[in-house]
Image (tube, rainbow, N blue to C red; front, side):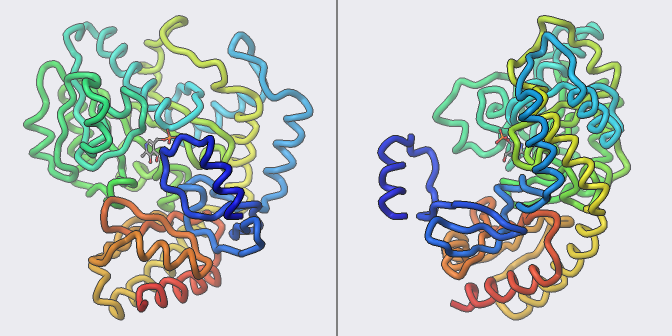
Amino acid sequence: MKKSIELAEENLIHSYNRYPVELDHGEDVYLYDTEGKKYLDFAAGIAVCALGYSNEAYKEALKAQIDKGIHFSNYFYSEPLKDAVKNISEATGLDKVFMANSGTEANEGALKIARKYAISKGYTNRSEVIAMDKAFHGRTMGALSVTGTKKYRENFEPLISGVTFCDFNNLESVKSAITDKTYAIILEPVQGEGGIYPATKEFIQGVRELCDKHDIVMICDEIQCGMGRTGKMFAFQNYDIKPDIVTLAKGVGNGIVVGAIATKKEVGEQLVPGDHGTTFGGNPLSCAAVNATFDEFKKQGILDNVNEVGEYLVSKLQSLKEKHSCIKDVRGLGFMLGIEVDIPVGDVCKKCLESGLIVLSAGSNVVRLVPPLVISKENVDEMINILDSALEQ
Ligand SMILES: Cc1ncc(COP(=O)(O)O)c(C=O)c1O
């Protein structure tokens, strides 16, 4: 494994600090490296592999689609495409869908659609966006421009201009940032990379009211917190609001590369041929993955599992917090949980990995748990034992 990793590093651009582990395959909610070591997976490929690694119906659906055709192009319709946009529309409660390929690309498209909507309403001078501190929306130039963490942006400036960052969960800060040039407010209902911060009801409902009052497009980035992760199909559904645009990726294809933008009818309808496009977006293979994922969510009762096992997981984490003074907070929703610690979070993740548990970090001091949505209480017990001893050490 060591030799293989060295060879990989000869050609890889070193844009990630990877663990010295070469993965081979997954089974159930476990991953195995090329030397046969088994890892309990509480990261799910960064909140992606919702169904775990052994969902046969999902795999069969992909194999069947590979036999029929992987890619046709957006000059044509296909049945998987028709079903994917229907599934996404029904689940979000939004009418119109654009199929993309990743989270960052979904956010790029969302910003363009919001801008076009403003122009179509006669707000031709509107060129400003409000985003949140600690927000993460992606790495391409537009999505990066609205990403709150300065260190991600500063080597690539100038980015798109007219972005104001506000304090998340501080409605006054948003109110005072609105100008007659604001065309969109973008936020994650539960901030992920920034450290697992759920929005308060008061905040997110307040943002919705401000958007209504000023005719501003509200964009909810559900790339990490969507697709069942918080116990509802989409996190905004925990707050009794409806955004104008929702962006999706990660779990929506359960590992096949796919993103999507869902919009209210009057917003999405402003986009006309020539405004936006992609070669791969909406291809039959990625759409088959979306459809199989939605089917399996229903058949497996995924949301019930997130709610039931999620509650159990939180109660176990609260007990750990009482035992270990280094745990300062446990927060999040469903299977999107953060454990804030006052010891180096990288050391905690590393210790867990050595003992056969994969967990992630978020922000500078948070252990992030985003497991496959099919984990059981037994998996939780196994995880807690390993985390307990890692914290002890
Ligand atoms: C909330 C959120 N938005 C956008 C992105 C970017 O998605 P992608 O990495 O697929 O471009 C991420 C990725 O972590 C994310 O968590």
